[in-house]
Length: 80
Image (cartoon, rainbow, N blue to C red; front, side, top):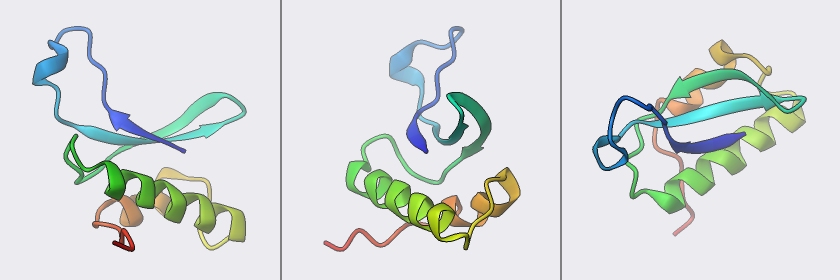
Protein backbone atom coordinates (compact mmCIF):
# COMPACT_ATOMS: atom_id res chain seq x y z
CA UNK A 1 0.00 0.00 0.00
CA UNK A 2 1.16 3.48 -0.78
CA UNK A 3 -0.65 6.70 0.14
CA UNK A 4 0.23 10.12 -1.18
CA UNK A 5 -0.76 13.13 -3.21
CA UNK A 6 -1.61 12.14 -6.75
CA UNK A 7 0.84 13.19 -9.42
CA UNK A 8 -0.24 14.94 -12.59
CA UNK A 9 2.34 16.39 -14.94
CA UNK A 10 -0.22 18.90 -16.23
CA UNK A 11 -0.95 20.47 -12.82
CA UNK A 12 1.65 22.32 -10.71
CA UNK A 13 2.50 20.32 -7.55
CA UNK A 14 1.32 23.16 -5.27
CA UNK A 15 -2.17 22.87 -6.80
CA UNK A 16 -2.51 19.12 -6.27
CA UNK A 17 -4.75 18.18 -3.35
CA UNK A 18 -6.05 14.69 -4.16
CA UNK A 19 -4.65 12.00 -1.86
CA UNK A 20 -4.73 8.51 -3.33
CA UNK A 21 -4.22 5.00 -1.99
CA UNK A 22 -2.29 2.74 -4.35
CA UNK A 23 -2.56 -1.02 -4.03
CA UNK A 24 0.84 -2.28 -5.15
CA UNK A 25 1.29 -5.93 -6.08
CA UNK A 26 4.56 -7.39 -7.31
CA UNK A 27 5.97 -3.88 -7.70
CA UNK A 28 3.13 -2.75 -9.95
CA UNK A 29 0.16 -0.52 -9.07
CA UNK A 30 -2.87 -2.79 -9.26
CA UNK A 31 -5.42 -0.16 -8.20
CA UNK A 32 -5.57 3.50 -7.28
CA UNK A 33 -8.40 4.88 -5.14
CA UNK A 34 -9.01 8.53 -4.23
CA UNK A 35 -9.26 9.05 -0.47
CA UNK A 36 -11.05 11.70 1.58
CA UNK A 37 -7.75 12.70 3.19
CA UNK A 38 -6.20 16.13 2.82
CA UNK A 39 -2.48 16.38 1.99
CA UNK A 40 -1.64 17.57 5.52
CA UNK A 41 -3.27 14.58 7.27
CA UNK A 42 -0.06 12.59 7.82
CA UNK A 43 -1.11 10.66 10.92
CA UNK A 44 -4.42 9.72 9.31
CA UNK A 45 -2.57 8.51 6.20
CA UNK A 46 -0.26 6.34 8.31
CA UNK A 47 -3.26 4.94 10.20
CA UNK A 48 -5.01 4.19 6.91
CA UNK A 49 -1.99 2.29 5.58
CA UNK A 50 -1.80 0.25 8.79
CA UNK A 51 -5.51 -0.57 8.59
CA UNK A 52 -5.34 -1.55 4.93
CA UNK A 53 -2.22 -3.70 5.34
CA UNK A 54 -3.69 -5.40 8.39
CA UNK A 55 -6.93 -6.15 6.53
CA UNK A 56 -5.09 -7.48 3.50
CA UNK A 57 -2.76 -9.65 5.59
CA UNK A 58 -5.63 -11.11 7.63
CA UNK A 59 -7.74 -11.82 4.56
CA UNK A 60 -10.49 -9.49 5.80
CA UNK A 61 -9.86 -7.38 2.68
CA UNK A 62 -9.34 -8.73 -0.81
CA UNK A 63 -6.57 -7.17 -2.91
CA UNK A 64 -9.06 -5.37 -5.14
CA UNK A 65 -10.15 -1.76 -5.55
CA UNK A 66 -13.71 -2.70 -4.63
CA UNK A 67 -12.62 -4.27 -1.37
CA UNK A 68 -10.40 -1.45 -0.15
CA UNK A 69 -12.57 1.43 -1.38
CA UNK A 70 -14.98 1.43 1.61
CA UNK A 71 -11.97 1.67 3.95
CA UNK A 72 -10.47 4.70 2.19
CA UNK A 73 -13.85 6.42 2.08
CA UNK A 74 -13.76 7.14 5.81
CA UNK A 75 -11.28 8.68 8.22
CA UNK A 76 -9.22 6.09 10.08
CA UNK A 77 -8.75 6.05 13.85
CA UNK A 78 -5.32 7.54 14.52
CA UNK A 79 -5.02 6.35 18.08
CA UNK A 80 -4.12 9.90 19.15
